[in-house]
Length: 314
Image (cartoon, rainbow, N blue to C red; front, side, top):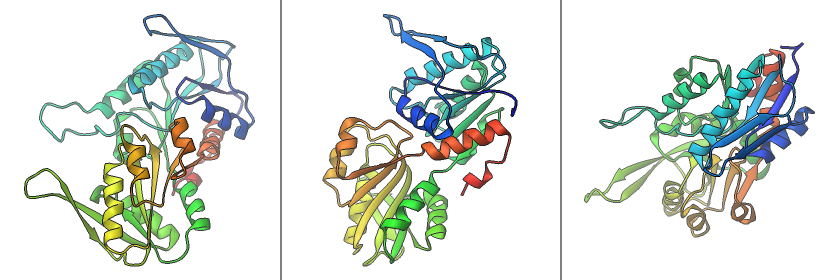
């Protein structure tokens, strides 16, 4: 692809992140006209010649998820029909990733369905970050570059957190991720064991590991309503943790999340900008937002130049 021109376009989901990436790689955003008909149907037209170009479309499928997903598929179709050489869907946040298996009778595997939709629309490649489960990559029949935001968090934590650090996984499923952070930071590891109480309603938090007098970092991929996060923070403080921080790659922060965080035992919640933060989140003194634009920019350049992206992985 070295002799093909790199073109970066954005949908309506997160144009600010697209502009940051464009500044980082020194490539202006492509011209396009994206609007909606009165009945909310997507109308899209490319505003420049992209024949033979290496096209990257930045579009996290965040709220409203369905709207942004259809918009992405429509854009991919337009680029395919306009003879782009290759189309890469850059999805920092991959919506529907939490429905990745049949854990109950008569339910869909929505993560696989979305993978099929992107391929059917004409995507040649997907660039994403911190999938809810890494095996979702296998749902695609096209190449997937799966980045991790760990370098961004580790650089932040290594400068701001002192010794006696413990990385905490909020559930058994996140142990591998938490262990990787603990190894890089030279920290201890702890796990929150969640169990239903006797009446089957509330969750009881058991802390496995040493947290007494230590700085605890609860590490997760997604924070949505922040219920598990804030209850975990309370459990850690009850076990004698000196202070508790939360780190989550994707700050969905829906419903009562922000109120829960403000009223919780958390010192601070650190998230990235894979999802565009709402004004009230930006203004919050308890939430800090880190940018993944440099990381995504490096990955886009590596994909375009056909060089290894493994140096960006943890």
